[in-house]
Image (tube, rainbow, N blue to C red; front, side, top):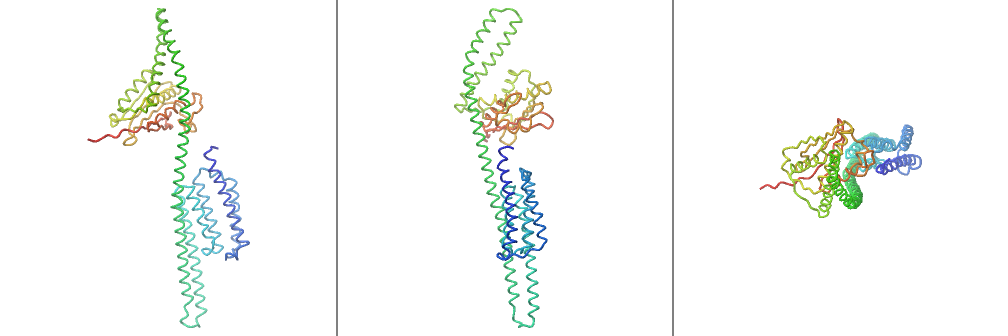
Length: 440
């Protein structure tokens, strides 16, 4: 069970306990407070309903975890609560029952815990039940008045108190009905709106907390990387001198070829260190530069062909984004290259070919979308949910490259989304804001 599900589980348990309290309240009122609150003596039929409700309460308490993260099942239980309350009210006085306002309790709970459709449905159901009880009590009073008039026929003709009393009670019942409907609507609209705002605020706070934790991890990784990069500078310089001496002292063709490969690897390390210094300086000074999308793609393609010549890139770029401008810094290119490198490795492990598809277009009028699709075996769903937000242990690594890329895109105002492809592999979707084009 995840930490996020613990509060929801606790609320489900509290709701099950509340059902037990409600059932005990019904029993207590019938046994000890019928005369005190003017309740109608219930028939034997209600006893069978209460026995069935007791089984339902026990089942809901024992298996309250079944409705965890299941809005449909939770709504069904609240609907059953409404039915049991309406049945109890009907047999103990109907609309004249002093506890008729408890029909609003499931509406309030659904407004807090469920989507907006749920409290509206319960409001309609509760209003229908209450309307039927109002109609029933009105018909009973009308029948009583007619019987009273028949018994009083020998009396004076100007005796009209029973009819007047019936009209007053009818107005009173109508006012009770309006009061119930207004209360239900207030709960549905107001409480639902407040609950929605609270959920939004909690989601924002949760996102900010996760972002803060991610930034702390990035800071620790950046500090360690800077220290190691500084320590690597001297050994690389020494290796450069040694390879130059080997070139001067060895003339064998095979050895020279090996030395040439060593020099290429050293060149790559030196270029990477130089880029790291430039990126560090750019990030520290918050330097952002404007770059056309087609120029960015050309630079990216050149870097990939230089550092990963075995890559088989299939790049598709929409014509409407080629001339658009995106704000970049030195961290954007390495972040994109890390995603492409992961895709190349995944495709090679699965299909023994380094194939990666890149589609560039618009997701919104002023938002660039870059989809990087590999042909690997895909990533497990539980890993996709945390990959990019936390370091994830796997046979291939800990997801640090994706974590760093995600942070780089966020700093530039973009996002990184990972999702499985319907056929095979994984899609990494990068979105970046585009500069608004000024009209002359």
